[in-house]
Length: 434
Image (tube, rainbow, N blue to C red; front, side):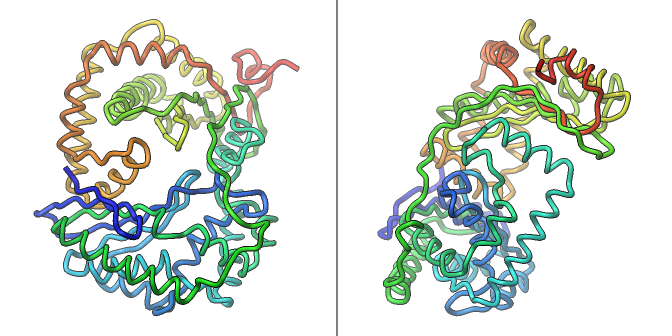
């Protein structure tokens, strides 16, 4: 079982020792993301994700990159709706220096003015690139409709107008207000001694907290920029819609919102269900739509969780004359799942696959640090791989049958993004009657 404790600075720390590993992965997580931004702060979390790579009180952008890249390791970051993460993987002997650097990036960045202006151009280009990618655009437009008029449904990176109005001063003040050691979660997995890692991180956090207060303690936010939006459960809009786009393929999304799993075992039950539906090449959707009928290249399902929501999503990409037939087969497979149970073989294959994926991933230090963080945010625990494997084996066939029946009866939002005949979509429930 990984070590889980709270530091004197208030930071939660999880450490998972992997004695046979040759690397260490470190993640620094904030429990905030784009859904927490006020209207005047749209795009701030994603912009900050970029700026922490541009210089700290002790290193410029090139020196930061060298810390990780010269070792053969890497450093990266991402912003989600509900979390923001900075993470790295490095050879084991380099982990302490890398950890110090990652903590300084998170809490002692300085946002140089010249770097800010250059990165604004980069982010504007990133947004424009998304607009040129029909798959990404389809998902952005879908979630605008699915979570209509709610911050969680807006683009994570913000929009062009949002980014153009951001000033370095407002962004830096927001960073100092929100990126604090006491609200963060640090996960470390790899060739470490858990107790030694805890002591080292504790000492670094004490040093950084003191230095941060000395350097930045008097910098405050203007009243209108203070704070964030506390997350509230998003209300889904169950709709049927078609949006015309001249891409060569049509992008089909079906989505169902459910309460997030209350514990790790329930999450793993959903993982088994997902494998049966569309999680692999032996899943129902892949076998029926691609292997049996050759109607598409890409079809899969996913189970995704946010802070207060969970989503079942079915993704399908197809085009031309295949679209209407593909929609019919897709809907037929979902109906079959609600009316009939998965077979015993499907259940055993799914359970074996989930267990196998966990076993293979158990050697991946980055997977293990992410697993701890996501488990902590979702359930307040950090189960070890061995505990999760035992939970997978404890899941019974009857539980999966019940979950399959529930899945098939859920109300689904339906969205087609591409080129299609509206009459055919209307007939199949992908377009609402006017």
